[in-house]
Length: 295
Image (cartoon, rainbow, N blue to C red; front, top):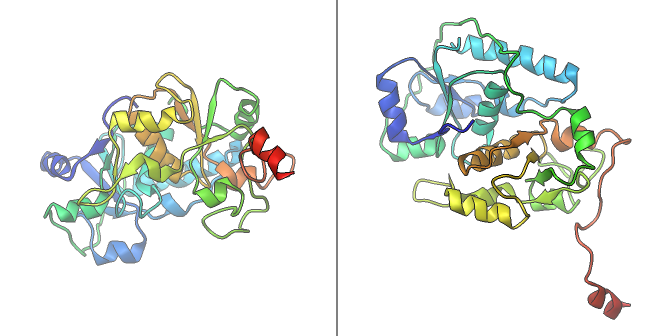
């Protein structure tokens, strides 16, 4: 994953001239129908699918998306280019699509930086005509280096201080006020995976005239340094279901943090097993002097 992942609208326009590109739109069907890149195939399940990271859950995920991507026209020969509305309106869903394809071992995957908003802001064409792709045989590469951390492995990592467990959820989830973006009580428990550090996923982006874009390499590394993560630090990311964390994974990879993986089941899975440890309450203790003064 050290190769360039993000492409600008201008770069994508040039790539499309050479052909052999499959565009994948991750937005909801109504938004897709209102306007999309010409030829783009809509796969909204990239965002909505809730996966578990047990062997059974990953088998179901593999079967589902191997078919979906094959039906979209991906065989391995084509370059997949994935986009959402912008880099934050879909909670990182284009990056989640990128991660799914990499997990399945697909060799050529890119993300449209800035999404549909950046494409239209650049004056490039869109259409309301739905795509009619020719299905292809999608082959899963069983030898692909796994970018996912499975549940059993995540349990072992909790007690390994050499691996940074990076929580990128919104602040209300991090401090245990809410269990998910779907509602405060969507999951049975609120809190954090023990030992996790926190960088809210929004911090990897900054505003631009065409919408949110990922920060520069140095800016991303500066954000990482606030929680002790450097280019050589092994990092495992999680959020609620692996969308926002996918956005952060792409940011870290683009910045040169090489050893980055995803606990894809994330809080949606971890919180539902009462045998798994969690940290609750505010994620910091009062300094001793303040605590004594309050007594």
